[in-house]
Image (cartoon, rainbow, N blue to C red; front, side, top):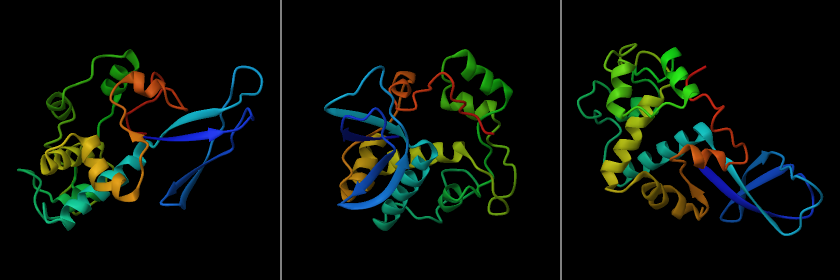
Length: 199
């Protein structure tokens, strides 16, 4: 997920990006913008990736759906032995994606695995602990959160997030990355070098 902020000025570097919601400053993000040569006049548009902060946005969307009584946080997720709340809190016992095979596939630029293939390769059905009895960061859990949001709203994720989170907060300049080309357009454009696996 990206936040786009327009910046005006003649400087070759910008030291801080300020995120405002409804005229209230909610975040200041340090970064620098470099230009090829000389000063630049007019408007610069910086596309800044949110990385895993996106999970907070997904969680907020689920909480809005719970508030609207479209789902319950204590509901089981489909036929899995954990609740929606446990998925949000990384206490469901799910593994994450990563490991040598995955990281090599990313490095090689191989085709993106289907969801079914990802779950099979990562043996997602083999929980790493009993739900609620541990904590493990899980991108797979948040893949399920995405599917949950899309099913509950009947909308694609970006439209659902606009409806549930961004529009009520008057945030109008966000979008989702869906291709490597999207990644390459970010301020920290490192689509080929970013390792999507766990550390």
